[in-house]
Length: 205
Ligand code: FES
Ligand code: FES
Image 1 (cartoon, protein in one colour):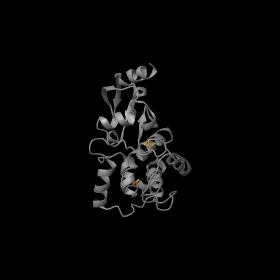
Image 2 (cartoon, helix red, strand yellow; image 1 turned 120 degrees about the horizontal axis):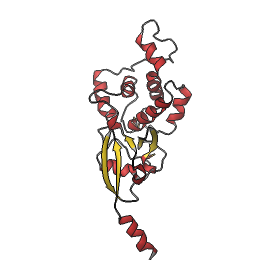
Image 3 (tube, rainbow, N blue to C red; image 1 turned 180 degrees about the vertical axis):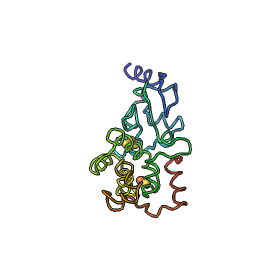
Image 4 (cartoon, helix red, strand yellow; image 1 turned 135 degrees about the vertical axis):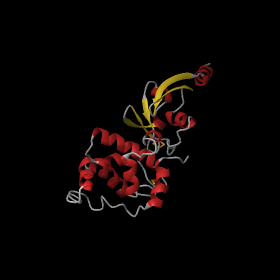
């Protein structure tokens, strides 16, 4: 009796309304569907499936501006939410400054962790435009990277903060207040940049 009721609930369909990357969506979901699964099912492959236990941060999206692990959130809980995935970060062909910084600083290799890192960093910069290195390190505690490491990612995030941007803009100020290597492009030439741009756009599945 109890298991019948359970399977009836699982087979039920719900309709949710939400906005994803600025577009209104109305999706049919099952009550137990995870937001991660629904987003990927709907073609948002930049939302990566990693640990599925809330540890790696690969599935990070922004829900109403807050970074969340979509593997830990039921899709039903996203009713009425504004979701941002990596597919919505660039404006047309123009990458977000954060994505540009990741490429310039060589903070992207295989790119699997990159969407989660970029979105987490966007949330941090939105609430704290000039974060300390410690705050960036703290933020990265929720994102695992298995090939690039973290130093270049930290440099990339700090490079987007206004004091660093200002320092980069003028030759007089160049280097003032910057961490060693913070402006180094780390050998990211055109070819590397194009390769990285594909990854930063998270076209991989
Ligand atoms: S897949 Fe969600 S935190 Fe790892
Ligand atoms: S760039 Fe490969 S896991 Fe981070």
